[in-house]
Structures are given as C-alpha cells and as structure tokens.
Length: 577
Image (cartoon, rainbow, N blue to C red; front, side, top):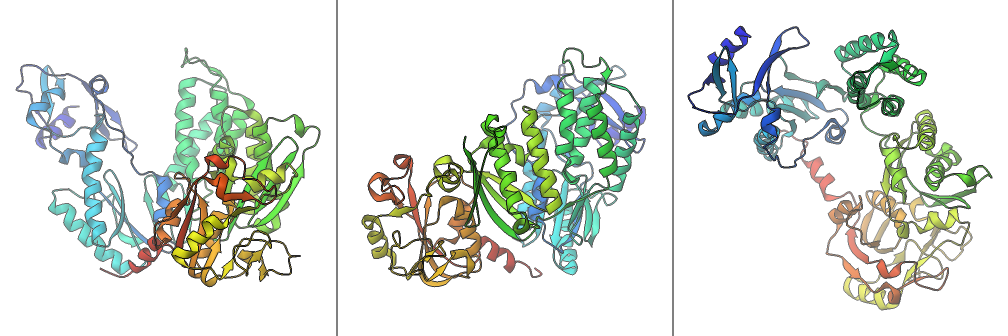
C-alpha cells in the first residue's frame, strides 16, 4: 500500500485533505491477474446518496453490426483514463479516505463512483462523434476505441488522426494495450474479433483461465450459492462467443436457483446435470461463432392453436395437427414447437439461411432470443431441441414479435381454416391513385382482390395472373401496388433491395415494429394514413372487415426500389479521407 500511495501522490491523483470534514470511504488493494495490485476505492455508502441517470453503454452484442467482412481493425486504449477527469475542489471532500491516520482526497474521477461511467462516456462519445464526422469508422466503450476500414493504409491514416486528437485533448495512450497496426484479428472488450475468417472467439488467455477454472470445479463435489454465482458470471460472459453457450448455461442457472439465498456460503452436492454442463463447457471453449449470420435470407411466421400449427415461409404455406399427447401441452409450448416443426418440414430449403421469424407469442420470442429461460422445463427442452436442429442445419434465427391481429395467415393455417385476403376498397385506392398515379401491376393479389387489371397471384392455377409468386422475379416496374399480408413486409423490403422503379406499399401502422425504420428510409413522400377500416377494408374470404379492424390503421407509402439510403451512404464512405 505504501508504494501505491507514493505513486498516487506523485501523480497528484490524491492529496492531503485540507477540509475540516468529509465523507470517508475505505480504500484497499486487490491482486490483478498479472500479480500486481490495484487500488479499490469502496464508494458503496456514498453511492446510496447519488441518483445516476439511465444511459446505455455499447456491448459486444453491437460489435458484429459495426464490422464488415474483410475489415482491418485497430484499437486504442487510454491509460488511467478516469484520472484525466478532474473533480471540482469543492466536491473533493466527498471522496475522502484515511491512510495511516491522515485524510486524503481524490482529485479526479475514481472508479466505483455510481455516476462515473456516464460522465466519462459523455467525454469519449464526443471524441468518437468528432472522428466520425471526419469519415472515420469507430466505436467506443468508455476508454477503449475500436477502428475499422476495408483498406489498411486508410486505417493507418485514420489512426494518426485519432491519436493526434486524443493527445491534443490531454489523454495518455496505453500503447502496450493498444493495437496500432491494422489487423483482421483484434481483441476488444475481452473478445477476439476475426474479420478475415468471420469468427468470434475467446482470446486464448481467457480460454486457459476458464479451462483451469472448470478443471477445478470438475474435481470438487460441492458448491454454494456464492461460488455458483461467480462461476455463472464467468461463463455468462464467455457464452457470447461459444456456439449454444447461453443454452448450455441454463442447467447451471436453474440448479443454482434451488440453493438457499439465506445461506449463500452453505455447501451442497453439485447435481449431475451441472457436472455434465461443465464437461460440455470444457470441451467447447475453443469453438467460435460466426461474426455474421448466413447471407441467404428466409422469412417465417408461425402460429399455433388447439387444433394444430401453421406457418408461412417466404410466401409458401405449411401446417400440421397435434397428436393426442401434444394436445395437452401448454399453448406456449405449442407455439415454440410450431417453429421447430416449420423448420423441420422445410429443412432442405432453410439450410445455411438466416431466418427472420415472426411470432405473436412473446414467450417464444424471448426463449429463442435468449437461448432458453428459467421458468419452464418443458419450454427449455423445446428450445434445446430447436437449437440442436438449427445448429446442424447452420440456421440463424432472428426472432421478432408480431401482434396476433397482424399474423392472420399463420393463425388461419394453424386452425385449418380459409386463408384471409385483405382488400382496400375503391374509396381509398382512387384517392391514392389520384395522388401518385395508377399502378401498372398489383403484386400480391387474386382475380377478386386486384386493384388494377394486371396482377401477380400466389395461386399457380390462376391462369389470368401475369405470373405466380411475386418473390420469384426481380421487380422493375414504373409503379406497382404492394399490399402483402403483414408478416411478408420484411421480405418485401428485402426484395426491394434489388428492385428498380417505385412502389405503393400498404402496411399496418405499428411504430415499434423492427422494419419501420427500413421502410421510412426508402420513402419518397410521407405516407397516406387510412383509418376507419371498418368501412374501407374487407377480408374477401369472409366478405367482412378483418377481425379487430376497428383497432387497425393502415399506411400507404410511396417508396423507391433499391437499397435503403443508409446502406447507400455507407458504401460511399469506403474511400480514404
């Protein structure tokens, strides 16, 4: 502690207190992985009086969307970053500790202060925004910067600009921890990112540490709540970069919930299921996950009823009925099983695909997104079966929630009933045509529902259609009418990336839907809003307005073919500054 205090005083990080009073906290040393020590200023009691604002730091979950295939990467780490932020002299009295009977104050921002991360993030986020304005691709987590560019020489120039800016602002660069030579494989936020191979993995140093930890656990017979929490925390971080890591962490989490909270250090026998999970972890530490999901895309919506399940896959339909045993299942399990059943039936079409899944069951979406949950053993088993199937087929699922009133196709299929066919009446279409022109074709229609003479049908027996299946051809129309079933909207937007011309796209207004930003980025005009759908919208399968039509609002967007503007902008920034 004497050497640490000498260093802190010499750097003016701490000074003798001149105040008659102050808020005193403890300071002590903890051993680091390299056998050196770092000071810990325990501000737990002071933090009780603070009210930090909510804010978000980036996490490793956001890095894949930042990186592009073949990128060259570099990192900059700031040395003693928090110590660059001074504390106002009048506030230093709240950051007091006593050493050898003498009170000292911190003069700069200490680790452990509840408001410190937000204060510091505001500074480095501003630096990152200045660099982005110069055309530099960068992302920052507190004091760690990650830079990327397709050209290593351009990246080197960008690093020079960033280093000059940071040093001019008074920051000190930790060159030992920084990666200043462009490479396609770097460690950032404790994860190895390889853009050349397109892989995410644990750094070898972490693999060895966790492997040693697991070996010790496999030799012991008991555990406690405290030790289980430490182990789960370590593996929880590693799960991001190991295939099915979160799924195989669930047995530990579920077993640890049975340990008494009142006696966190009391030991109990380790269950067999936990030991099996630990063996799985030890044998899978060297595995890696893809940096990017498969480029081939498919769009799936599913639903389940008491009678059976139904699914719509990229404009094609499939369905099934329950066995006597399955009829007794909870509806959540039926909904989750419907996803696996739809993928299994279409496994040859879906292999090596990324699936955009839409379900009107929030539990299903959550269990798939999080690779399981802790509340239901039966749902956990269904989730495990689903991921075992998708891992064999190299399928990546992106699950999204869709309100039940917009999931009519899959719902009708699950009930073995007639499929809905929505149609806007002339009271609306004529208004639209006067504003934007008459379309040359209706891309999602039938002989009954078409709004112009030429149309595309999903029925191969409809001989009057111009062709069958709108997605079977590249679109190139001066102006087309596009009123797809709501679950098909994501696929429509994806198909528009390769299209030319303009399109009048009819969609439900749903501000929280994941595809809305994509739709807006393609628009050439604000949408026309259609309310009072009890009078303007009809389901031709019944001759009546759709169910819950009184709660629906439609929007008609005039959008252009081609990629969204944000993607076009990214391509233009490829050159050197």
